Image (cartoon, rainbow, N blue to C red; front, side, top):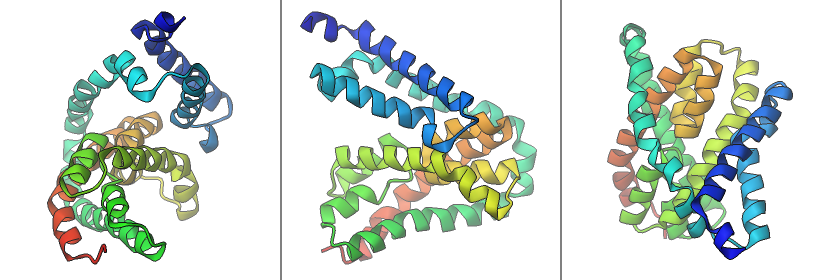
Length: 233
């Protein structure tokens, strides 16, 4: 049984099957945010790992192939972005403003709320890069004195929450422009938000991928400076 549980094919297959199941439930429920496939997949997989006694590190090694696809998938985002290049040029100014405001809000909101709730400096540093993609967040947290694993958990939680509430936020504000919706998703919910944006429309996906990349660079540049000036202790 132990050999079967640790076989790479098992967890790779289960991961794909669980996501397809979650996606099917999400579509049948009419896109209900609480049934977002990433959220339901995480819940089910955690339950399976607890039930079988398989550690996360063992699971990750078994399902590593999916992780390896992240690089090519990220590079492939350039294709829809190139198709919408003319629109990007038209609204480049507003996009830059949104990048700065959104990027700073993502960082400062964590620091302000974390300080108010008495979180330690290690936790604050780990949570601060929550709105950028996981590899960048982990590297920043580790280099700046935080915990890479805690940063990864914060990033995943942020991405899932962003996907779950995006429609609840956009509809009351009457924001329907796919470029605006996509850029907001990529800026706040990184890769998970970009995947959700492509479900909404190709234009939303293109602008979400753009925002994800730009925010990764922006946060990497400004976060060390902000933490250096912030009273974390």
